[in-house]
Length: 159
Image 1 (cartoon, one colour):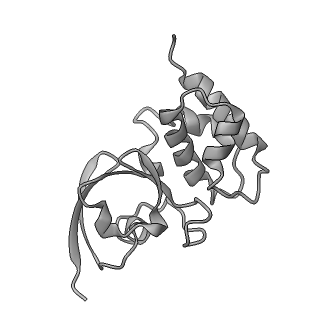
Image 2 (cartoon, rainbow, N blue to C red):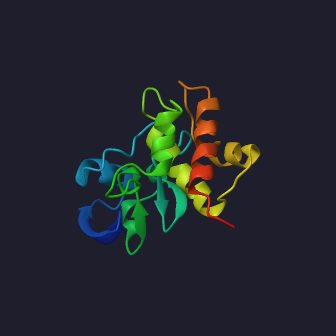
């Protein structure tokens, strides 16, 4: 099968790569581009470990073909932190011990970014709704919810 050339923006940088037409974006991110922060959990869109932002919208990279990324802006966990260090969301996950094994953490951080970009001051119900697609077997979610609430408070803009 002939490979397809794709040009896209990943974490703010223009990227070109060749891929098979049936390759998922997750496969290309991890295996071709070395963006291994995006994790593979289920391969069926049920766990959220592979969550990325596509033009600011939360997407499971395991359900998206890499060729579909052409012309779009992709943000992975590697693109969340700033040049000066961790993003406040990442910092709050650390401070609240909202991570353990680390498989779900990148997806949860990306999902939290999508949530807070759309709803800067979410209530607990909204947080739980937005993170419902991200499964974690280690933490029990309470620490994650508290980390998201603290991140929202930290990122809040003055009225």
